Length: 293
Image 1 (cartoon, one colour):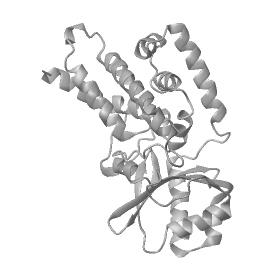
Image 2 (image 1 turned 45 degrees about the vertical axis):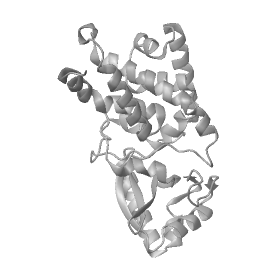
Image 3 (image 1 turned 45 degrees about the horizontal axis):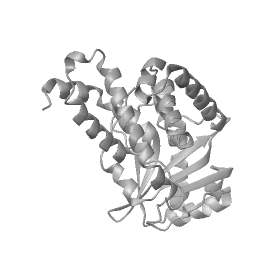
């Protein structure tokens, strides 16, 4: 039987615990399941044995997230088309004041984290984003401190090698480019649209095979522009949202949510579109979340 104190401690740290699990899983719905299971376990803990609630709950959530990540590995291997993380709808107007937090939940970073092994991902997130000690991480992932240090170094180098050479634009600049993008799309201005796209811009769509969408990334400004104008038709209703700490677009056909579209902007041009079309993943946009570190 849980107590009020159990609930109060867990609730106070929930935004941080959610962020840890989401960055490990790339799925808000799976994160909700992990937190629910973690709370049930936490509710049975004798609080007199807990010296540091934050460290204890972080370890507990990390273990549960690792179990979920390993269990879902086969499903991701069998996934139809490209697998992208679930979009994360935030209730903060702008949480980007914390630069590390903002970058850590960006779609670009989550895509890079997908290339790590489960242990590498857990260690990287706990160390680089949340600043946990190697001792604490070792206990969370069930490895020796020496091994954790090696994994941390390997994961850090792996991420660094896959990061783009140019720094992505901040949310304000991204918003400006997105506004110009919407103006060009709404008027069918192909030249204006092309001026906003990098020559090697890439369109990556995640449909899970459940809706019609390209199953392989489309590269090149002219190809992507044609694709954009075909998707964002005059009868499509577009709304602005804050997804993954960046201005994003959600598209509706009538009352039906058709997709969430996030962009990556470098040097004033869109270099990447992430189009989440899988209806199962769009369920994550039903309610805003709070993140913290």
